[in-house]
Length: 209
Length: 317
Image 1 (tube, rainbow over the protein chains, first blue to last red):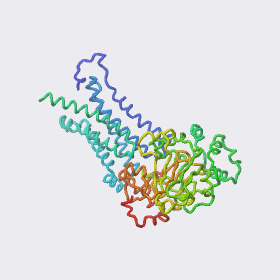
Image 2: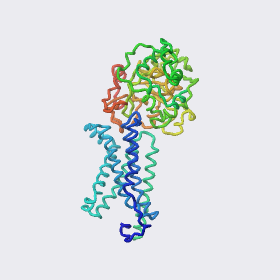
Image 3: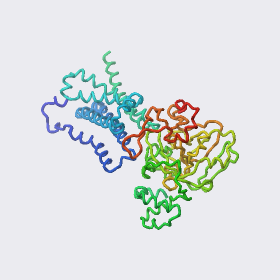
Image 4: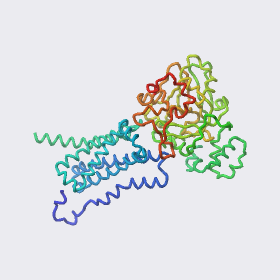
C-alpha cells in the first residue's frame, strides 16, 4: 500500500521486489530434494528423510514469514511488505508437501491408521491442526476470496498465523525422541518474533490509556 | 583401518554382489584360499583383510535364523542409532572411526562365582561363533534383517557361574568422551546401560555379538562386542560393552531413565502397546515402501512367549 501510493516514480524509486525471483529462490530446497531423490541420497529411510526435510523447511519459511513485518518496521523497508504474502504461501506449499509425505508416503492412504494416528499421536494432531490453519489462510489469500471476507475480518483471521506457528513448534518439540536442540532454536526464534509483536501491542495500549 | 575404508568412498556392500559375498564367506572360513580375492581391486581386498572374522564361522544354518531378504550392508552400517556418536542416523557412520577397539576388555562382575576380565581372544575361545540372521525392530517403527555373527550370551554367563542371587544382568557400554563425542551432550545418562532379566539373558536367542555379514563388527554397529536381543526393541541391545554385571536388583537403563513412560524395562516388541510417538502396529522394513504388520515379540514368540506367561505386558511394556 505504501509504495503504490507513491505516485510519480523517479528511476531511483523504481526498485520493486521481484516476486517471481522470490518464488524461484524458495523452490531451491525442493529442487535439492528432487536431485537427492534422483541420485539416491535420501538415506536408508527415504520416507522419513522427506518427511523431516519438508517439515523443517516449513518451519523455516514460517519463521521467515513472521520476520517480514518486524524487519519492515525496524529497518524502515516498506519495499519488502509483499514478501509477507509470498513467503506465507511458500510456507503453505511446504506444509502441503510435508502433509502429503505423511498421508501418501508414510501411511499410503491407510485410513484406519491415519485416524488412529490423529487420535493417538499428540504430535500428529498438533501438526494436522497447524496444517489445516495454513490451508485456510492460503485459501483466503486468493484475492477474490479476500474481498469477500473483507479487509477487517481478513486481518483478524490472519492473526491465526501466530497460533499456527506455536502449534508447529510444539509439533516439532514433541516428535523428536530426545535431542531437542533444533526445536529449541525454533522456539527461541518464535519467542523473539512473537515477543516483538507483544511489545508493540503493549506500547500501543499504553499510549491509548 | 576403518577410517581408510571410509575415506576411500567405497563400501564393501556397494561393490559386493551376493555371489562375491558368498565367495568371501567361504574365503573367510578358510576353505578357499584368497584366489577369488586376487581378482578383486586392491582396496577391497585391503578392507577385507582388515575386517575379516578372526575365527571360523559355523557354516550350519541356525534354526533361529530368518529366511527373509537381508538388509543391505550399506544400510546396516550407515543408518544407526548410537547416540555416543551423535543423534543423527548417519552420525555413527561418520564418527565411529574414533573408537579404538584394540586391547578391548570386558569385565564380568557382580553376583558370580568366578568374576573375570576377558580380552577378545578369551571371548572367542568361549564358544564357536555362528551366523544368526535376525530381524531387528527399532522402537521408531523401522526394521532390518541382519546376519549377525556371535554365540549365545549364556556361554559367557555360564563361564562365570552366576550365584543364586543373580536375577538380572546389567550391560554397561564404554564411557570415553574422546572416543565417543556424542557423550559431551547429556542427551542420555552416560555410560549407556541396559539390562535383562537373567532368564532373558540365558535365552538361546540372546546373542553375544562380534560381527555381521561375516566380518568383525563395524564400529558404528557396536564394536567390538555387543548383545543382540531380537524380540526387544533395538535400544535394549547394548553396544560396545565393557562391563557385564549380574545383580539381584533390576538395573536402571539409560532410555528408561530418560523417559520411563515411553521406554519400559522390558520393551518387548509388541504391536498392541503403542508408543506416544509411534504406533507399534506396523513397521517399515528398510528398503521397502509399504509398511508391514509388526509381529508379537518381533516374530520370536515360539522361543520367548513363555518367559512372560505371568506378566501383564500392558503394564510391564
